[in-house]
Image (cartoon, rainbow, N blue to C red; front, side, top):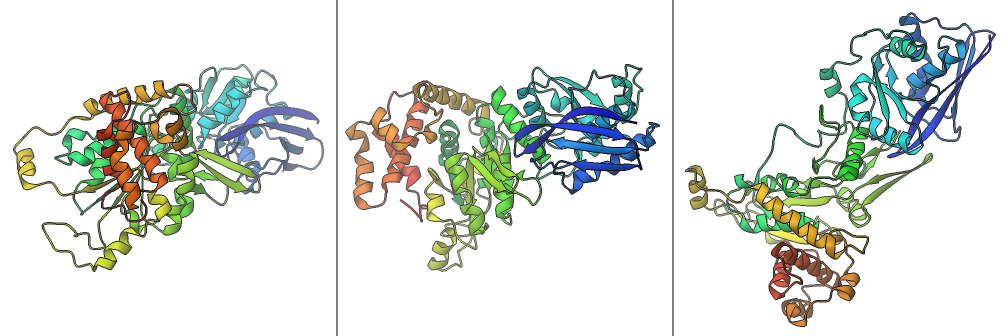
Length: 527
């Protein structure tokens, strides 16, 4: 017997997908199955999975010499997502599928030995790549169908079994097989972290008692895209504040939502039953995280790290001085470039990483410095050394630095008695949205869309400030407490203060406010 079959799949390197042509050739001779085209070990196992799936589905498996080629041959292929494409190509080559209507379709799923079609990670970036290549029909596991359908212009078909695919391809009645993977099992697939959004919890700023300066810093961070550092005793509310930052950020537009959802699809952290993330994600990392966990990597297919899972949202590092120096310093390049590039022999995997960094720390190792409830047992040198674990170059990239002090008993008792709290998230988010609109209009003819992104030289040349607005900043420069780069960052924050206040240009009060957030007591490593 001699026959030829073809199907399409997508190979991923980072978020960049490449169409892979799966060709199958069947010839007479002693039975043999050869898979060529740089498959990895998981993909090599597809030979056994596909054969067992066909036999257990009641489909005749040919006693022939089978050769399956994955083209382009020079690109390394990884993962089990090629299973269904290989099965289709082989069954076309052997005549089990007699019609060619689906030869130009893309197949993205794993096969179980019993013939069930199983979901895989990274379906969304694969479908995006298929759409860009002009391939507009995609077959995925039934559990991945809703996710794949988020890409416009693509006809998505969800499969539960290999029997369904063969019947559909041959134009016969499709059997009503049970779901390939129960929803409960799908929700527990291995992931690189918790879901990006917890649909059961909506933290609100009105729940925060007091903390007026920290609340103002959150608003400035959201309005201008500025990184934030919170320093205070345990229980002062640092984590509570950080968790409320995503709520006042503008919702993601369509392009950003697809971008963010693609990252979480590859990470396996898409929220259950929410295939499109439309709100800024919140990603928190334990202080034991490695460099690879922080910025991405892995021995096989590179996976996005915490900085990419926080793309367009918030990366929260609690107990920041407890992180390893290498993990913290690995943040410097993503903060500057907004991207992570991971080099492998197969190529360079690139992941977007435009996030708001929120760091939190105790003021000293025992955490009681400045507390009215207990005295600190740390020596002055220990206190300085503790925060100095955060390197100067990293701290210099953080525009807003706030001392978070415990809420006074009067405010706590008033809140306990049902007193009125602070502004709600919706009210603050509305001001943030208006401030962002002002910045976007001002930056309309530039490649930037928020104040934190604008280089200092551009700010000085295109939007210079009045001399009297910089009086206090000039004193700080002459005293050596503010560096030239620090001045640029102060001016950026001052523009955000002005946008929130509805001013055409920052005045002295706006610059002084920005300077106050720059030169807090936590400013130990840079000016």
